[in-house]
Image (cartoon, rainbow, N blue to C red; front, side):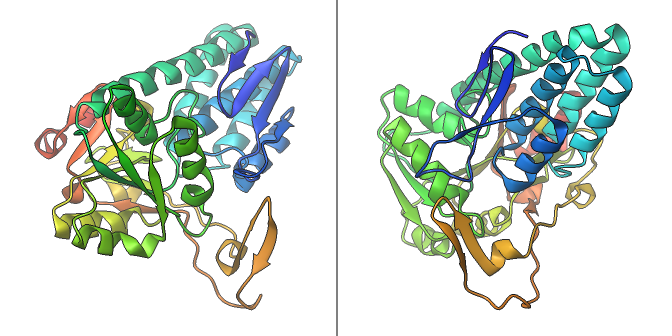
Length: 339
């Protein structure tokens, strides 16, 4: 397999390495991923994260295992185990389906080429998304984001953050409000790191400050990513996204979901059919990272910890995809089922 290099994943000289996002922003550590067990653990620990990147990472690993001599039967088993590691993110399912289709048609020898295609396609998809979305951003805009949607979450420049980066490259003056994104702080740890990399002015805020910012007229638009978009336009994203959409609707702030076509699940009729991953209660009882671990709740405290929530299509101003920007009337007409 050819060398494949991105911000948080690299395949070089026959070895797959993953940037440990759990250690960011204070430590940049690359970890070897040489088995399905290791990849599944990395996904669950969020050492690798972002719906597009998880799909790419799983695909590259399967291709690597094939080159190491894995049998067709074991590769099928590995694919199913990887599929179960992140049930909400449909990009993972789409990538694995393409890898398995290649395996069925041509055997193990073609998996490397398929993984390379998926990697390069994601880079191109991100570039097209960035171009489509940047046209919507006005000079001087204050943009609010949730979770992390940049090059840490994809093989390319990212989705929502890719749009922000493209707008800056066009010479537009921007400011980004970064939701810290409880309970795992992907905004506070990762998006702020990426804003520094892009040299974009930004301010970190607690999640529950967003309503105040909108009431004060300090937010011009909201850009978020997606782990799965249903056929009717409902979408799942990091928990807290739905709250933002409700607040934005009340304050008449444009709210956009930004994703590649690989995040669309045409077979999923609506948000109610999207499976929602439940995560470890410890994530809500405290926090951990490169700084160590801190617990602020008793160990026996009952916890409800869904990783994602679902935002209804009626709250969305537009869907920014690599194939174009779609308005509510187009989504209602079923455009997502034709992608």
